[in-house]
Length: 138
Image (tube, rainbow, N blue to C red; front, side, top):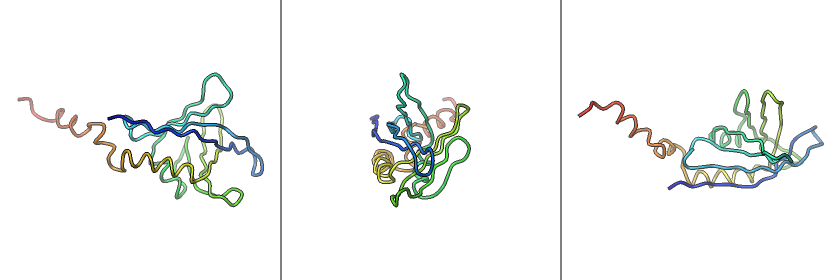
């Protein structure tokens, strides 16, 4: 059974250490795409900006810095509150966003209840596909 776990959140686009603007976003996790998280940023345009990256990257980033290249995630504090930072880089520019750790953690916990770590491959039928591919024809 396929499931989608979504959460509307507000991220803070960091313009300087003391200045930022709120960017509404939607976190989405689908059990039919169990390795990925999808983030849609609603930036006052006709079409939202979409990013997709590994769920494991976001999980790890709640606890320690991780990622390289286009997506990096790390925990820190802002105004004495724990936050998760998300740095995104594309040919169109770079963005540094942050959101309260509790917001991301509670959403991730819901995804982990739907698909526990290590259970992703079973949803995709990878083992069965490999068996069919590698078994001799009868």
